[in-house]
Image (cartoon, rainbow, N blue to C red; front, side, top):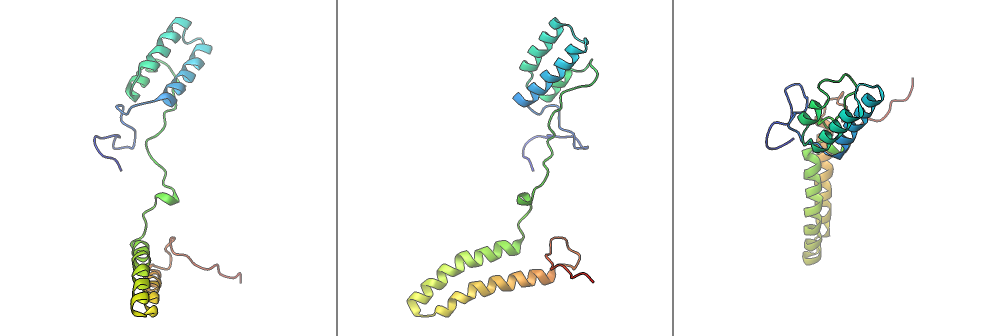
Length: 154
């Protein structure tokens, strides 16, 4: 979910134009320190490349610093986001149930107070319970999002 330009290739690799920050620069500096300790770089070349890391503003500029060096290269974070439970879409029935309770209960309280129809409090609760039960019936038996009681061993 992004707006604007293309931030990745068709294979899920981040675009080279994606901007970098301090964590990516520090990863590059650590990789350069390995090359210095392995004598692939002398101290002058190491300092020149460290300065280039500080000036780099995107992934392409940072990776050019390592173009002629073998691994290790800086480990740059991926742009892909692993979905968590909180990132999942909220089912429409949950939204409708919340709306029925949030909007229905205050209306029912006003009606109950003004007209003495306290039974109206049961309407939003009954609607929410009915929607949840209908959604439960709609889901196929093997649906992993459907809750089920554990079966007794036997």
